[in-house]
Length: 373
Ligand code: F6R
Image (cartoon, rainbow, N blue to C red; front, side, top):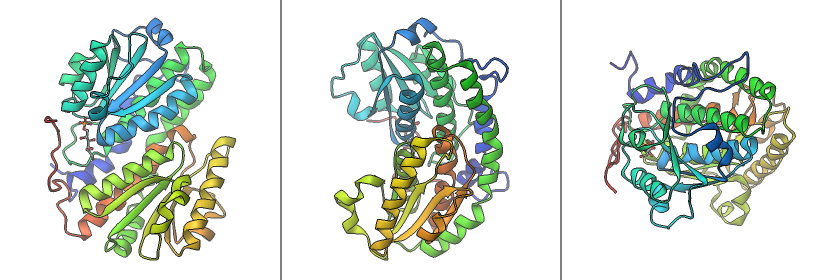
């Protein structure tokens, strides 16, 4: 049942090229540049009329929502707010009929996300689910569902559902950008070509397995870890930290790289491994600018004798001068980079947890589906 893998989590990490491919399949046209979402009660006119998007979710799915904010604002040019479902439902959100609510959920059964959905519906907002389980509660109650085709996820720590969610959210973004006239079909087609290449690039990234195992060997005794990122890479820093804490029980924090000097720099010493996401799309000036800022944050960590593990883009000639270890990823458009970046962080968490003798698939105190509040 584990297909020759030692744990479901590892098997599911390795299924990500397939999960991303299946989630894309049949939804893009490389000929016309058009996106095809599943049948739903949200029309093109609705997508044009919406003034704001509210995204609500929990845990890993919330991290996918944070990344989606960058996608939607940049390409579909619509305001986005992202909330934890457990917070959203109790803060009397200003959501209304002119807003779209997106629920992101692997299981479709998370109690707080169901309650958030009902709150939005009661206020007249249409709800769109990004969900991995057909016929689940949230999918049934939504005006539309874009299913992630990750397949059943058994490991409690979410992996392939997350990369499939990022893929689905990118497709929703392209669709909204198209119907709102914010992107040309030609530009959309370029993104689709990149999407089509992602599974192959993911296969390539999975070859980092041995390298991350080496890193785990070196750092599995650490009592704390810091994960840093800027812009769309920040949610991935949060997700990398969550993966590590939930399966290895090491205290880990994700932080926006630029916030370090406002407090967390005080934590840095030679015992604190700092994972920094320092990728770039060299064709994108904004991405390069953020990269340069991240490099200066990285130098600040080194200056305080911190240990730096950098996640960078292949061909980066300078990164090795600044970091103790570098993990290289293929170059992709920035908005798609989270799908690759999370993979070495999942593998790192996995190998550290295995070395510490933890129950990777069934971490203590956690359930796969959280149906209580
Ligand atoms: C972490 C993890 C949880 C879930 C969260 C939401 O690895 O799996 O944080 O992401 O409980 O669950 P769903 O997506 O089923 O609503």
